[in-house]
Length: 155
Image (tube, rainbow, N blue to C red):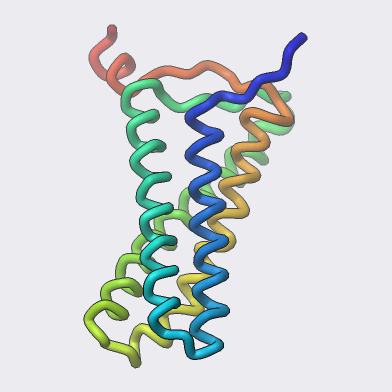
């Protein structure tokens, strides 16, 4: 039996990993006082996160979300983990936008306080996102996928 990974989830997960890696690089750059490189790197991290979100949202709307296909005794743990990930991702995205705006608007006292917190949340969001991907597509075969449009309109 051939092993293959679904293309869109693999691409979107790759972009969230790129986003987290560039956040780490940006953190290192600001520690070295390389402000211009930090700005460019953090903008790249935001673009990577945005690309992830566009792919994820488009896939969710048009193709659907994949249900957990692993053993039933693992499903409650997966669901709790998924809720934790979604919460981290949502909080991380909101913090990320605010942190980017405070940096862009030169409100550096707030930016310096929010930056490290936002980065840590984003790292955990990315790590748990990769874990969700692994649980859905690598460790277990994904369950049923139904699009929102199909679910809502009954097509």
